[in-house]
Length: 173
View 1 (tube, one colour):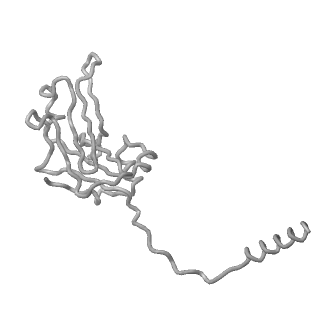
View 2: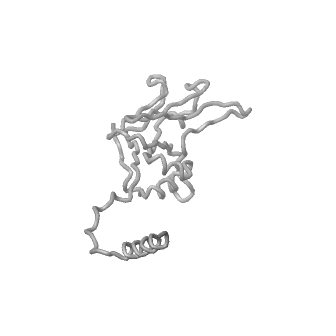
View 3: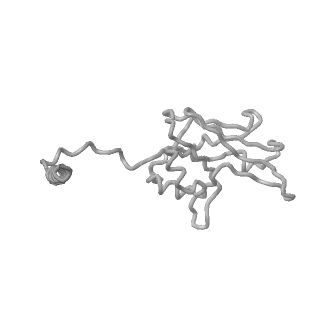
């Protein structure tokens, strides 16, 4: 009896696995290959960290983030020998010659905004090169992507997110 049941089971598996029907219609097209957004503040809206704004600036997202998004912030740090922009990942920390901390550029974000701020011993003494006329790129990407890329390297983030310079949204506020 057991042999007959085993025989029927094997025949049934062969019969059902060889069934084939017509190909179904194609599914809907997936989302485009972009997995993020990039914003840059442009002239005349450079950020200035002053006593009047408590050494803090805020960028409000045009669309609220979703739970799985993270924000990466990069500060324009000049150009390299080839004239290409250099983007420094935040947080950045600077030290006195004796090795003690002078100040840091940091940020926090919510679903609605990112707040970039100076943190230090005496913000008023921080060189103007780090306080005035600052340009930032704010990159929004999914958290799982951010976990798999070198976040300190702006170019790697852009390449991995399939974003190009032409997709950087220049913002005025």
